[in-house]
Image (cartoon, rainbow, N blue to C red):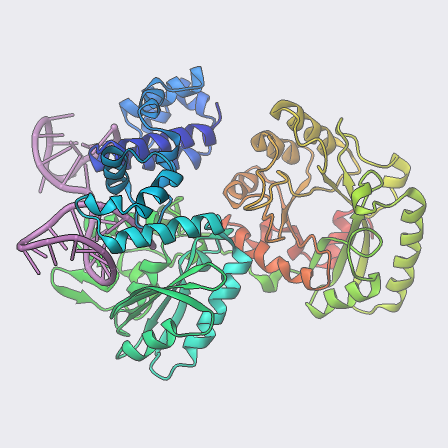
Length: 570
DNA sequence: GCCGTTTTCGGCCCGACTGTTTTCAGTCG
């Protein structure tokens, strides 16, 4: 059983224990262990065998034993036992805003509610009123919550959340009472999806700002409003919170509401060990505030280098910050070119020349065009004849362009058996070849992995496209052992793309450090199908930063000359 | 459940907001 699956089961055990009313610290231990396992670099079976798993912080004797059972038998008796006592629908109740384990437990035990449908019915019959701690308002809120759950899945692509956040930011930035203002939360951390939007502002008084926020355009309903915090739901369905604090409190509030929760917990623990106390309003030694002008000052006071928001996931960033070993993260301005761009020749919308001029306008020196290959019929993949015609057009456009070089490439389907989609003599005519899986998603993990490994071994392949094929909020990636894929890419000196389309962001940032450690370079590729799509590299930068990548790790930060040398041309 | 220079028991991050209360529990982040 793989780590992700082990982590899922441990996480669910934590939740089931909460529903049973177990010691909250015990529940937390399971949740924490799940996260730890998920982020572990090594092989779980190997770590069990050599005893190194028991050395991991947060994994003690009991958890080691349960993980061992999961890895060796594929399931956990303790989990099955807990699961048997709780109907599937009860777990789903936890997704209703305002319902936590305690309330779900009460509703289930006293009213026999075991699904969202049951809960809705119970609310409509006013049966929640009979329960201690529930009233008319909570019943109404639950009904609204069920409605909202049905309307949307509750998470939003980073591209969408960031755009909505930016609109709110612009609205508030113009307010005369606002001193400092930042977008916080998962949007600031550049997570690939967000549940809601967090904004933090500083001001001498909050009332007028709050009023601007709660009555702003696009606000559908106000779900909370107080002196320091207001919450709204926008017409688009996404929720947004605004916190207003004094300007002295702003740095700690910003750090706090940027999260992640896990990073904050670790940061507070560190503060506590240093005899300090950190909360959203400040850093204190006893009752005395320790002045912090900005976030960097907070980290400095805790003996740490400044941790960029993208890294605040409790994934080793505090240890690295302590040792002054944080990477200098790649920035958008370092990108010198792009690969993986489609044109009208296959399923893109732009003509070659206009795509080239758009790329130049974004400051790029080279543009790697890669339309679909012949097997990708749904995407009007190029026949061998069309490939030659496109090469001729690229030569003509290159002759006209100054300051930008178009590179002839292809996004070749990786066929079912791992072969590429043209004969070798055609493949040899491309300056680069991206290999992507677009079919046979249902292969077993072993088959899929071998298929991709075979493609990586092909001498004409330059890089692997969207390595798992996932569509965020849409479909999971196909089953593939990314550890083996990364190892194969390293062995064959191939690049792995970070597909920067906000629907993909694949390679996942959680795997980038592993790729980097294996010596695999990353290309930040827009997979653009329109002129505007070229700008999606920004999302790729966001996740590359989350993945601890520096400019040196990203092949597209190299200039044209270096790229041509790398591609074996001069 | 885990953990330990206060070490094998007794802590474990902490505050705002809400709805239900009349002093507080639950949820959220």
